[in-house]
Amino acid sequence: MLLKDKNGPHLNKESEVGNSLVRIERSYRNIVLLKNQLCSYSCEPKTYKLFEEFEDLKLQLELLRLSHLKLIESLKSPVTFIESKQQQVDELINKTIALEQGVVVYIKLAK
Image (cartoon, rainbow, N blue to C red):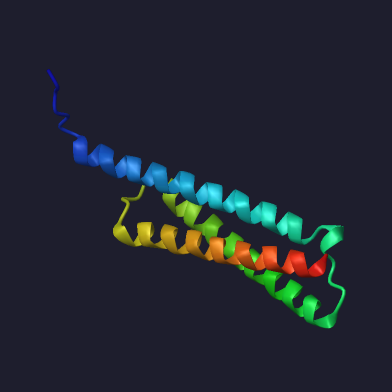
């Protein structure tokens, strides 16, 4: 016999926050790895165009990293989770994926 939990919706919200926190922390780690990969010696720009692209990617990675940190801190606080936070998580993850593709293209051009 299955018992219904009176705190079901509350627990569901907590699991949503936990899932979002895991997703955004994973995305944050990915950004740190991308930045380390981009700043490695083998990816130094060889032309001015590559240098401009390199600097732009570094700036975008740093801004995205800071956005991730801010969101992680807000998700860890005991404030109620609302739909806008879920949307913010999804937006940052999508930006991370797009930026990752830009870094991969740059690395191929730099090598």
